[in-house]
Length: 346
Ligand SMILES: Nc1ncnc2c1ncn2[C@@H]1O[C@H](COP(=O)(O)OP(=O)(O)O)[C@@H](O)[C@H]1O
Ligand SMILES: [Mg+2]
Image (cartoon, rainbow, N blue to C red):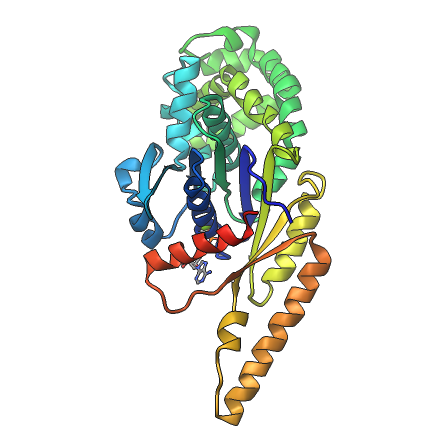
């Protein structure tokens, strides 16, 4: 098995399996090797945030974290801040105040995946890091998103052309002020007119203005979007990116990981790793119950875990195991998992 250093490391998996915890431990492990590391993370548990010293002010900003005698940069994703950075690059200061953009950038508004990718691109361009570790939103969304990149490209290439031909060329070039509804009514035809008319009846004319402005703003930022999308070629490359699919020894989770791999098969290269978290084997072998009932419980737990590992080893090229940590304090917990990464790092 080779866990060579690459420019990117991506952690994906369903919710609650330990992505954020293991991505953090991995980032620490890499930084202990002397590498300049950035950890981009989403929704860390409060306990982990405390350990990293991330406060509410540091959300969305690169923050230096000092832990276990090593330093690394951490960035807790904030869609609003990424949008502001994009706006600064495009000199479109209105971006973040537009209500449609605000809705899209809510945690489940659908923009998080592309924003993580854009953040990854911006940080990669800064050339400040040897490795960027990315903790992705739970589930298959990130992978779906990566697979859908072709569609997003053609969205910019084709859909915008269509939208603008409806809204009038001026909109594409216009500065801040958007076309008034009256003018739109004259230009817009067919389906789009119907849709806007419907939106107006339920949301009011201001919403339509915001809608048109959002289309315009997103279009103005298209270079940043497309550059972010271009990053996918690096992520697909086995020399540039380590992929970690995370799962845990829990009912149903193994199947979710196998499904996720199926989902990702067009995207993730074949040298990916399955990270199996919360293994009980170590605890179980050190447990010698006297009570006959507990002896059966132990045997049953061991049997289940063995079965699950067998399935996963059949489905994945490489399985990395991490134990369920039961009796350590939160800091020791991360410390232990960081050490565990070290054992895989050769
Ligand atoms: N190896 C482990 N042993 C024990 N608890 C763990 C382990 N890994 C993660 N956890 C705990 O599981 C919960 C979910 O972990 P988290 O990293 O937030 O998962 P995710 O990011 O996949 O949603 C947290 O409470 C975390 O402390
Ligand atoms: Mg998480």
